[in-house]
Image (cartoon, rainbow, N blue to C red; front, side, top):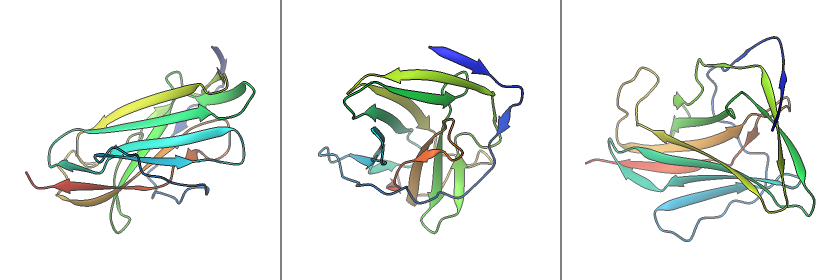
Length: 168
């Protein structure tokens, strides 16, 4: 792994989930997990895995995976000392209730990761079903979108998935 240092830190600001940059989306055969795949014009596939539904108060496992689908090694320049990735949770109408990187300073470091053909980088987080103020969210339908922060001007985003939080 190789790291480049830059003089300034980046700060993530609240934003609404954005539509993906195109590409197909398909559901995982497992009935409790949704998989969203975005295949951009290059050889990197960005995939988001979230449960289709969870009971209120239960941790929500979220997996963001980037895979080299090409025939050659692929250099990937990733932000942060620890790879920076974001997850945005919004109400069905689009109002953002939580972002993983909301208000956090991202170290101005770029890591070089080389992904061999077929190799994947997996990033995981568990959302505690709390909003930006730390209050539990109500049961209902929410949307989830992942974003991988790279050296590109805009993050690579997954397609948006739906998450149903059911009453206990």
